[in-house]
Image 1 (cartoon, rainbow, N blue to C red):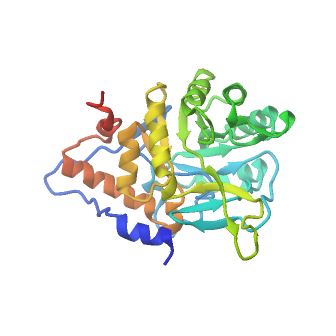
Image 2: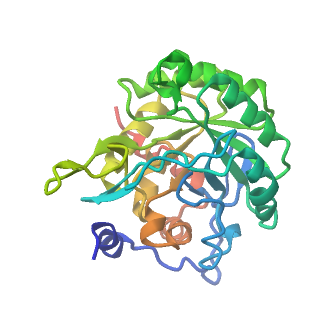
Image 3: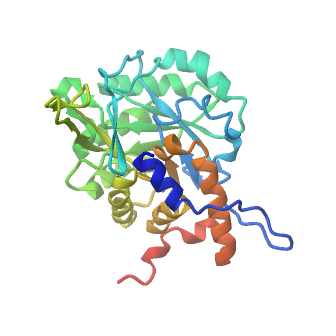
Length: 330
């Protein structure tokens, strides 16, 4: 049994959350930058593809929103293999933004998503400011897309490969360029691999971001001691899963004190209790990534668990729990 599977079995206490006769239904609805969602549970980009692999497990309409994998102007083959390696309580990935390109997404994948009554948010990436602007403009023409999540962890090839998300000024430039090319809500996905996450958050908010996603993966690596070489083909990759949750919760807590725009919390969410930690730290919604690989129904289990928790606690609206852990803290 893998570490992630064992943790899911031991810690997922979500129950069915069915309505109880005579009791008032819990209002799980939230709104992120004008995107109305029936509940606060979303998928994390890169872990849900375009949803087709999960429709056998649950209707996509059960989710608050679907965030599809990162999209670039041209198709990308991604990084060399191996791309995935499990670590204690986590997963290292080095996919390298493999995707079919924006044209294929517009003509093949988004039309399939139109059949589902759920908000679709597209994660976008680029190697230059111009690429970010172009992909934003192209996707904004689709009636299916309700928002753009901007991956600012990509390298700026015109600045020597330095990641856009490493410096506030560069991150702000990306957000401004995307805002110039779309009228859709713009969500900035922040990297935790920085010295001051609050400074990054304020910079993208000032540049016009309508919401924040945090955190992206932590940079890590693994070494095969028998081969005496790195396990991943790209040497380093992004660490996700339960191991990063304390970092994510801490960063949501800090950023919520410094910005006015809503936050989507993510990083290591495997069960209802994990999602509640993020919400009580200040997140309006949450996104599930690695947890879906362990349990394909992880997202809907969490939705039901949130409803049951609220009912037992006498909470009528999930919004009442946002930032609840901050109350009374001096």
